[in-house]
Image (cartoon, rainbow, N blue to C red; front, top):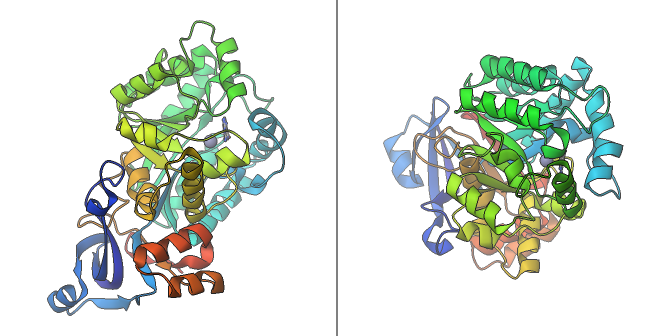
Length: 428
Ligand code: GUN
Ligand code: ZN
């Protein structure tokens, strides 16, 4: 058993659903007891120390904050190598940077190399769970699940399916997309800490036949997640309208093919019609805010306040490599800035909740990861709140932990990650 002691972030409720002060606490003299890869107890340091004298203590001083591990709810690990590619909007960016790089993962060794590099980079940034798109190659899915399993990391992933509007070598068919996804579900879903997400890339790259085949597959495996993109850029929305003249709107291209439901997770969702918001709310589906991506590829400003008010679960994500950072700290900062531009800035408590419990909830993993709660899996990220001279001098002047955390959110990077614990094991 291990006892982590120090300032600890605790969630009592959703801080987007009511006053954040009633929902999120920092326990200054807190403690988290880890046993058998889980959180066995949460409380005050003095009490847990006395109750568990045999536990090895890992002390973090007042310049630290013990947080849940970060959960990145929408990424494309195959795009690791092309992150921060200049000057394109979505469709040209896909054609010029993304598809050529995804083609390189036809080489299974390269896929394995990128998967390992990606998990190393994100872990160094405090991220303990991601939901990733892979490429159309089934071995790209095996590569990520295998790399995650080797470090006992909770993970969501799926084979990206595309049967049109993608280059030769990056297309499957309705049948092969169905068959390969089904085989991967059987191989990985629910094995260890793995969740499979059925993954049509987005409506422009799937025929109605492929969407229907994947909708049928989801019907046969309803405990899988279904992840895709929705209404990210205005040009894309117009393209979908041309490709699906019968559809009422973009969401309808999914809804009509069995791809709307409680375990659906839609990335971006910036340009939504009122009917789409109503249907998403009724279905209980989740949306994922990808703020660095939405500014980097010039997409637009996600309506966090409006969508949260509809009680739609929202996760937070880097959207690597459309997003310009692997860091969930940087992603929280961008979410704050977008909130500012919309006149609804998020508090540090809301930002860190989104990057942990909010994302976990959007992936239906909120009972396992994303908060420091008894019985949860022991995935923790410990922040150093004075990691650089610039942050340290602001931290020195902070009147409470919230001011200090906010400075690290706005200015922090991987240097702010003091420690990462995955399934109760300290990562080196
Ligand atoms: N829409 C379809 N594919 C992608 C992708 O890879 N990245 C982003 N940001 N949007 C997409
Ligand atoms: Zn994406």
